[in-house]
Image 1 (tube, rainbow, N blue to C red):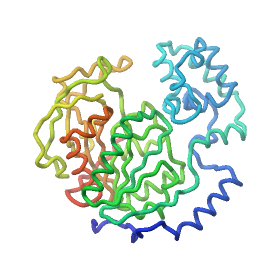
Image 2: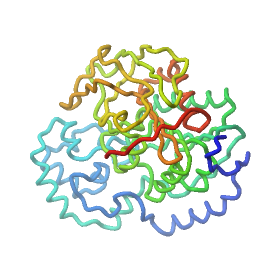
Image 3: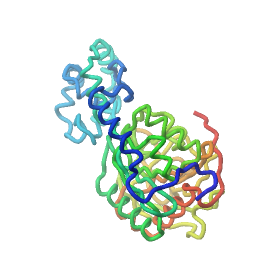
Amino acid sequence: MSPNKTRATRPAIVLFSLALAIFSRAVIAESHPPTDCPLRDQPYSIQTPLMDILLKPEAVAIVNSHMQGVLDKMPRGFVSSEPPSFSAILDLKGLAALAGLPEDSLPAIDRELAQLPLTDADRTARCARYDFVPPSLEIPKGDPAILLFEKINGYRDGPSVEAASKALKTMAAEHGWALVQTENGAVMTPELLSHFDLVIWNNISGDVLTLTQRQAFIDYIRAGGGFLGIHGSGGDPMYLWDWYVDELIGARFIGHTKSPQFQDATVNIHENRTGIGKGMPAGFSMNDEWYSFAPNPGDSGAAIIATLDESTYTPGDFHGRDLRMGNHPIAWAHCLGKGRSFYSAIGHRPETYSDPHYVELLYQAILWAAGEQGDCPARVVTR
């Protein structure tokens, strides 16, 4: 274990020491509605996540009256009020772009939404997709200790989530790591996080943590914890948590390949201060859905692990936005305080998680993010 870690001593059995605290929190959660979920008290507007619009019939009527009944015409996967759903990562501007509708009605919609009362029932409905009772965890023996986090409120691509989960569990078993999986966002407490060297966010989409849970995770990272984000964990078109996307990930998703969605491209591995990629081929071909970002994470000091050769595929545009980056990072790493952050945008197709090059890249990234090897490049936050 890395000397800069603050991880508590791990038991190999259920954490009985936390049982009473978990039970108490469960009782409190049942008798007192949660109050710290994001946007709980925000007035309705065109920036309100579509999921919260869908939870209020009056808001749905306003949108439909101005946008040609769009909410009655979209596929259920886009307009479900139950997570996981694309509606958790869309606002009305994004909906207009997705549906090919003009944006000229948005100011009028914004004015009418602002007049809607925000009731206690609305607040409770907004909080319902968050978790408030921490799980009981059984942590096996092994080092490093890894929390595989799979809570998804937004878009859930089941095959990619499951393929990544299987690959990571296989890797942990082969190398003697202690890996624990959960879909419960309430795992983000100082007590539970202290047992782990690294938290892997497996294709997480949508806002999944309460304000208290966010702060616990921030504190964990800054004190020496590790983060590894995979593909969809950095691919939402809208975020409610600026720290996560601007500081932890270090760049914002601006779109992915569309014509066609999945393309062969050359991935180039670069020598860098982390050592991730050592011994790997300088370049290899993969077929995937390729993300583009802004700003370029390399401009603020992140160590660029892998880039895409844009001459080997067609970046195209995404709702009219040019996706060419020139120097096109697809995996990078940096440090925040004592903590380490690695993100890879590879991984939409399930097949990528059995590609030997990508498996090796993830293996080395896990060791680095857990503090087991490599240097720690600091990133200058510019946003």
